[in-house]
Length: 290
Length: 146
Figure 1 (cartoon, each protein chain N blue to C red):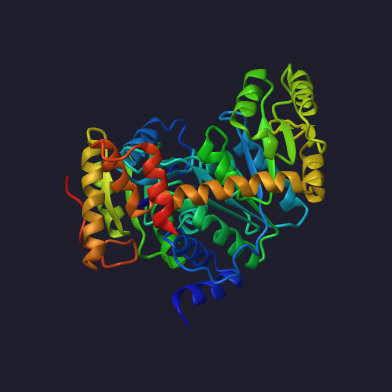
Figure 2 (cartoon, rainbow over the protein chains, first blue to last red):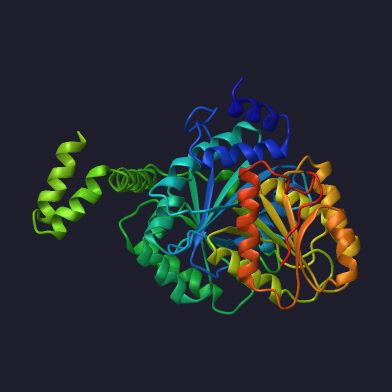
């Protein structure tokens, strides 16, 4: 039995250390012991500061009180300069370390071209195969690369705040179209209703026939958390959104292939020295990659 | 390296721990910060789940002789003897040798530079590579001298 398989067997029997080690092996590019894509995950994203981690903390409490187990993969960016990362999501999930029914793992994007993408699916597969009822991917929805991370989830929840400014940011980033459910958090603050109305009108203005629900929740007071959990249980993703997500996944796989190709650096040098135009370089990489 | 920076006990602020967490990040490490008021059991759980190679414990309020040994024992009991434990905050000189006896490999206090903490971690990496004892459950003896 190889290392991965024996870690997987121990992880399935509830050994958390083996599970943690196995996820590290997958993060380093190890082969998954589970069929690829067999898992199911919920992606939770939204602009910085809207209360995603706090809300996930409340979701966890609700699931655990219902006797269900939850694993969270909390994703934060690595510094492009040093490669280091500060992963602080679990400090907002206050009860996360007190129950055996909760597993929280912080992940850094590590600036590997497509690196995190490659390992996310196997990680979700393994967590599901180990019997975790819910697997949550948490990412900051503040840029294109983060959208692509969340596109790897099977269902997506967009969390927003009561300030209209955040909603506009979300629209700009293109996350709104991918979301199966939209949550306006901090609903204990004024303007939350207005923000919900603004989101609804923004959604109905598009040609999208299948408009996601918009829920008002306050992670601070726990208002609406139980209803949110009910909605997540029944949440279905539409075909249209699945197509958009496949699009994001394909682009990220393409990026990854490009960035790891030998022809990439070669082409940069050729363009720099004037031996190739941009279009020629694209043609060159495309022809040679076949 | 994946490093947990933890605040055991009832300290009221975490300015120092946050400075350390940022310095480690800038040194190229992946830092998982726990936030204030964690129990030793929670810290052991976090180190387990995060598959961390090291844990830095920051305490200010004087409970270090109770809390830090509990974390060290907890890690060994959880089968995490290879995890490196270091400490910082307000830990008087006379309290340090019992902590080293428990497997703590470095203690940093007021006046320590973030550079020296990064140098300690470099030393930890090279000792790990050479299979020399550095984990909390491995042979006591080697420790960092500033």
